[in-house]
Length: 97
Image 1 (cartoon, rainbow, N blue to C red):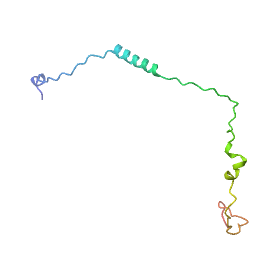
Image 2: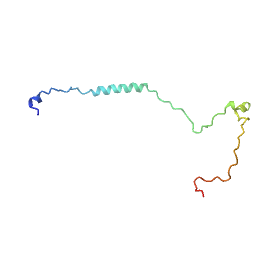
Image 3: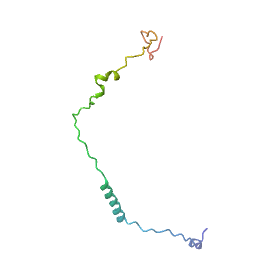
């Protein structure tokens, strides 16, 4: 148990800090906001029309003179058929008998 003399030996004293100057802090912050507001570049809207067509313009490179180079190939590979397809295909959701 501590005696009264032991309690008196405690010498801790917290550091006392003066309160901040809120008016100065507010003025600094307001100055910073005003500087940033002066640097801001506004967005300029572009005019548009609701009735404007969304179709792309015709492409010049797809005219008749070079349509063969862009068209489907004449040299197609033949596809082999593996056999006859069954007339009725059984359903996979119904039970089979």
